[in-house]
Image (cartoon, rainbow, N blue to C red; front, side):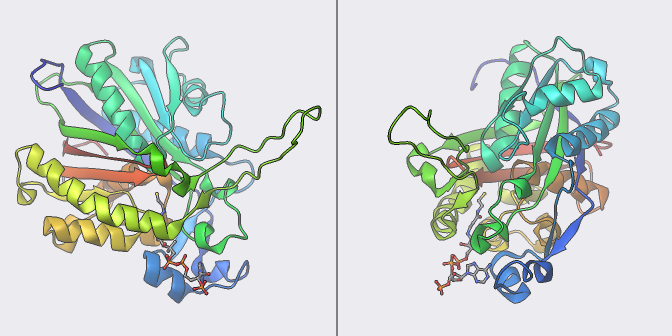
Length: 337
Ligand code: COA
């Protein structure tokens, strides 16, 4: 959108929600041969929150969204689009966006839909919202990133199931009334050629009348080593370049709020930016990888806990299945959480 005059976007409110049930690394030793030491030293994760009973990504997302709307000073009636990002939804359709629209009393004729960009989902959704608000087509958009990974993991697969947790984060974005754009820069990328590195096939079987007749399993499948190698190679350089392209220096930006997938990957980005620990928001120790929810969860909880002071600026960056990745440099105003 270079050189095109667009309507500036304001991040008006953020919120998050995690399930109450805590499952520690020690708890996982009851499922398979692993240890707290193995998991923590390789990932930085100590525990994760998991949905139980009928609780789902819709419930978590609705609570996160309620908080974000309350903080924005707007009402459910003001929302004129809902975009939900999820990599592990409870159902493929209706969209989580539609479920949340109904749940929160958002007007029942506004568009609501889901996008699939896995753990980059929030950045993708924000980029879509920027286009809609910037062009004047829509004014106020609710973004909800929410995942119930735990219901789609193979709990016999110790290499993938140790990593993920459940959670939700939400953001209300609206046309800015003071001319200031809270999106200083935003960028999204994908490389489908390496799509098999992380996948969640839908279970299904052929019509009984055809041959060959196959049935697929339905679990998150991941080649952890190759994902690690790809992201460690691409992400630090990508984030550094994003800052440069925005015409900024890393030290001018207050915080790095990255996708929480692996502490060692976060540290590689941190090192590249030359940031001290207090500039980097991490909560992976307590929540694991909550997929699309991870960035807004880290942001909203960081503000709530006082680790992210307002007003400030932050680099958000994420990567995930697709493979997708993306980043944004944003302004965080007083009172958003
Ligand atoms: N506990 C104990 N041992 C385990 C284990 C577990 N939970 N999971 C795997 N192992 C074992 C393997 O069986 C293997 O044993 P072997 O050498 O006898 O065959 C050994 O540990 C090494 O396995 P490997 O998969 O090569 O481990 P790793 O060092 O690559 O670490 C990850 C695994 C998943 C922690 C790491 O690859 C990773 O973090 N990748 C990035 C994943 C990611 O970020 N995904 C989300 C993207 S959004």
